[in-house]
Image (cartoon, rainbow, N blue to C red; front, side, top):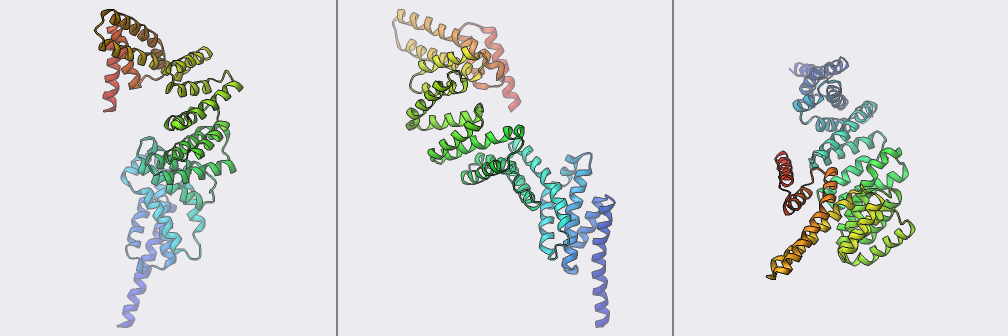
Length: 396
C-alpha cells in the first residue's frame, strides 16, 4: 500500500512539472494564453512542485504576460482583458526571485524586467496625464523597482514624475524625497539636453513649491536660485519662485531688491521684469502696470504682461464702479463712468491678445464678457459667452 501511495506521489509531481514544461514550450511558440493556462494549473498546487520548478513557473508567467502585451496589435485590448497584467508581472518576478535560490533564472528575469520597466514608466506617465494620480504613482513605483533590478538606478525621470505626483497627492515628505533623488541623479548623470529641458525644470519648480509649503523658505530660495541659473527662461520655475515670494510677505523687500539688481545687470530681461512687476502688484499696482508696459515695449507678444496688464485695467475699472455706486453726486458719477469706460477700452486689446494664446482660459473669457458688455459691444459679449458655455459643456 505504501509503495502504491509513493508511486501516486511521484506521478503527481511529474504531472505538475510537466505542466511547467508545457508552458515553457507554449511561451517559445508565442502561445501565451495557452502558457498561462498551464501555469495556472501548475501553480494551483505549489506543494507538488520543487522550489526550482516554482521559480521557473513564475519566470514563465511574467514572460507570458509581457509577451502577450508586446506582441499584440491591440495592447489596450490585452490590458482590458487582463486589467491586473502589470501587477501580475511584478508579482511573478518577485515570486521567482524568492524561489530561485541558485539564481538560475536571473537573466530571464532581467529580460522581462527590461521589457516591463519602460512600459510601466510610460503607462505611469499616461495615467499622470489623465490625472489618475494614485495609479500613476503605483506604476512609477513598479518601474523604479525594475529599473533598479536591471542596473539602471541612475535613470531619474521615474523619481521626478513620482515626486510630482506625490506633491499633487499632498504627500510632501515623499515628494521631496523623490524630487531630491531626481535632482541628485540628474547632476550625476544628466540626460541629453533636449530631454532634460523637458523634465528637470519641473523638478525644480516642484521642489520650490514643496519646501515653500513646508515653510522652509531658505531651502526653497536656494533651489530657486539653482533652477533659475540652469533654466533662466523657464516659466514654471519663475512662477514657483514668484508664488514663494507672494505667499511670504516677509520676503517682499528681499524679492524686490533681488530682482531690481537682476534688472540692473540685464535691463532687457523680460522674464525678470515680469516678476518684478508682479511683486509690485501687492503694494503698488500702478508701478506694476508701468513695468508690464515696459515688457510689452520689449516684446509685444509677452503673454504674462498682456494678461496681467489687462487684469490691472479691469481692476481699476472695478474700483471706480464701486465709487460710482457709493455716491449720489451725478457729476462724480459721470466722471467715474467716463474713467471706468476708458479703463475697459484700455483693457480690451490686452485681454483679446491674451485670449488668442489662451483660448480656453475661463477667467479670461469672463473678463472679456464683462468688458465688452460694459462697452456696449453686445455681439462680442455674446460670442465670448458662447465660447465659455461650449468649454464648460466639454468639461462636464
